[in-house]
Length: 163
Length: 471
Image 1 (cartoon, rainbow over the protein chains, first blue to last red):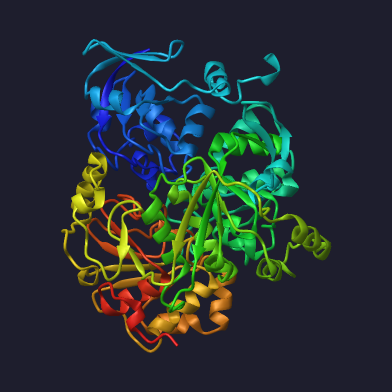
Image 2: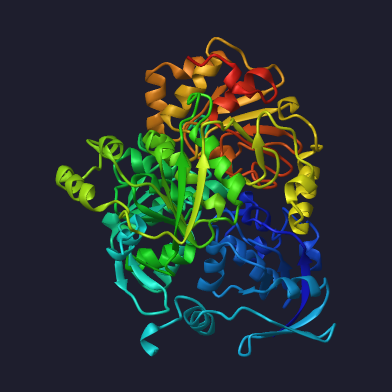
């Protein structure tokens, strides 16, 4: 899966800046997407392209349990968020609806990857290739069940009986 | 080896457990509200599913309800639609709803305990991160997203990776318990362990500093567990817990026999092991004021704003975060907290809008007027809190001091209804999050206790409430 990086070099990006509270009344996902990251980066909507990835620091998605947060990012075109760590409810919401891939990376990868870098994520080998910089990093593998839910396309498409 | 309280509740609710996989957990109580439930009901309809246990599902409307005159129509059309949608969903699926006109309406985390719906040893979920509040009763209470709301509606279960137990011991006694409150304890904890300090854990709060607290104060502590990143927070039940729940509207008929079994079972064994531990000594803690844009960016009221270098202790992202926070908050390092002027005061939210919070705040303002440049409001946590406060005459104390006295709801905690800050306005708020834009685009939030908010309203700037007579 290839895409370009939008980097927010900070920790604690909360769900209130990912999708501010006043938009939790919006049910149309395309409209919701126009307000994604509005609380942090008003230019996000104009610069994000289908297939882009977000890169950020620790505790990404902290705060509210609003599933609108991964939905707004997903419908903006974001396919994965790479972060040093995730708040658990955000992580869970992202996986449940298969909205985007929450990928945990280490400090070296975080430091090395820059805004605009073209990245190729290979889940099968748990590798992230930086095509722009010709580097390769390891990602933290998904746990078995998270991997299965993601492959199935979300919690409601995953059938445990198939094991 | 012994077990922690969390492990005991967990084990008694496991439906399916396999090695190295999340477990399927039975849900005893499912609380729903208007904002995170509509898509879940849409999903049920789409798949022709029913609500498995409507009798264990309770709904109210709190997030976007107006807090002014409720005889008027709701002007915000999108809010009106969400409220109507919840009414229809509850009717179609046979769910008990405390609607906008119900005497039981209120913030979901205030009404659950108040009605005796929240019980020790149970599992409680809600599509809201502050569900952790109910942990004050020794329940395992988890905030979930909308997909999981749908999953619980359909199956009464939740799949969950088992969190690890985290012990936070609060030791000692507060010198002035009217001025140094439960809010100051929990803000102190988050200041020390950070907003990610509890990630992946269930916190059990223990020690004299916790058992000394009333039930309402314990709810304030557990409420903010999520701000430390924890999945949940809980406190072992004791006589205070059992007395609080006795005789409430939905308290079970066989309550006394339940209490007997809770007394035997709902405690952490003396030889149980916690994976993580933290101790806070509270003998000398001061009232807390947040200065930044997450709850970990907090200091004593007697302190000055720290420099990004002091705050970050060498971590570059922390430093950048502090610089960004100070720019957003329009504050400079070295400014004394007591010199910060405020424009607005909000006493409300699931953290601090219960009767005791209003009683304590009213003691600070009684017979005084708020500063002429301040606009202040009290939004009781539930209609029942409002009624009880009015019976005690608290509404008059607040109104005489020029506070606005509102109807119950989440209100300015998250800026979904018309109660918001204007850009640049600075607010002393008893809520739980000081994130950028949380209380309105460009609004600046300082988290404080109800008595600190009341004192700031009177003086027009932050003030150490310990200097005031609260007897």
